[in-house]
Image (cartoon, rainbow, N blue to C red; front, side, top):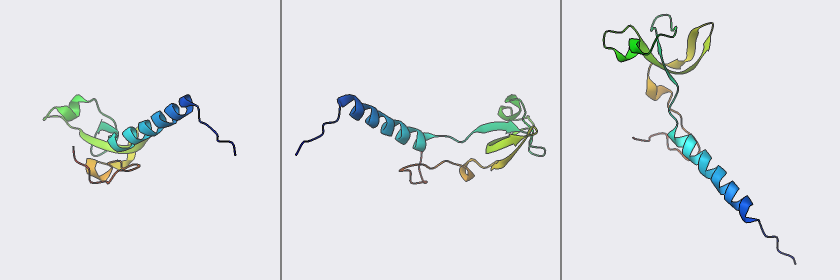
Length: 91
């Protein structure tokens, strides 16, 4: 019975792909943007980083007609879990 040998390049590329998926799936941060809390329209970043600013960070979601929806002002509500992640990570 003939044994099939995998080429080393196939094994290396497959292993690197698996490593990339593992790293990106657990360590990803949700998208964050500065928005007006009432209209959810995008604001310049200084509106959220300045304590006198009018903006709040909005996590996740998508934009339609200049207004964001489908996300949350609470980062923990949209934290991404992924392959092999427990969902209760710290860091």
